[in-house]
Length: 297
Image (cartoon, rainbow, N blue to C red; front, side, top):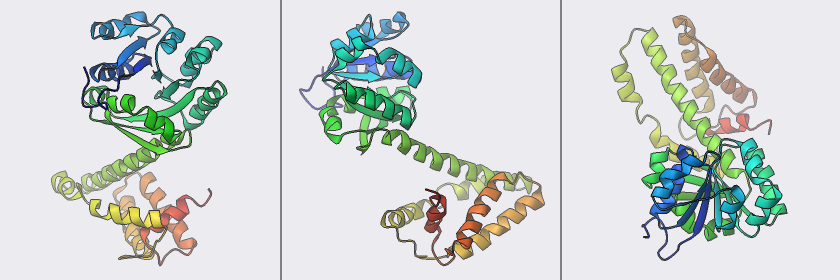
């Protein structure tokens, strides 16, 4: 059986190391795409449900590596990855094959694993999953990867089966793990900004219905323009200057103080504006704030 998630007539032998909720979803998606799947977990019983769906169970990580062309690792952390992978037996079984790390690790930890893989003749990619287990099974999940593009391309059938939306974001190992933190930085920053505005409304005795209606989608149209300015590194003001933006935000800071709200968020934003003014960026557009954020780098 071959699903539309994998290129036609391309079947791979794939092992999945770590069969928690996410690892099991990855394995199930691979089975659904027609790949020959072997699973391994420190608790053997975790393999039973997948065996019932057509997978095989390996008695050890080395055995799982020996029987497959591509090995997916989805365990708790870097310490666990190191423990189960970095043995002479596993290294020998993985030589000449592809190892894909999608565990919860940092960029530096992934680079450590990448160096170990290179030393042992193992092709290596790291990835970050932007979704939940069911999204993987439903082929509605983006997984971003970094590492040599040639390895990404050679693994297309397997990577496409897992979530349906594989994206290569850079050749450097660890890039995917840095990229996902950049996405998190945006997501949490925008979410906290949304909640900060709601707190102002609530403290002022205003209903939130109109606030929510107005804020949803607010500023979405400016994102492509800001993105283009960042890519081109051209920060000319197309509307308001940074000096005007800073003056407008001063009113937010004052209102937060008058309402007796926690000022942590507004103070942090205000400080960025002040640093931009001090750096002589007042006549540029708000995209120039990236210069302040990257100044120490």
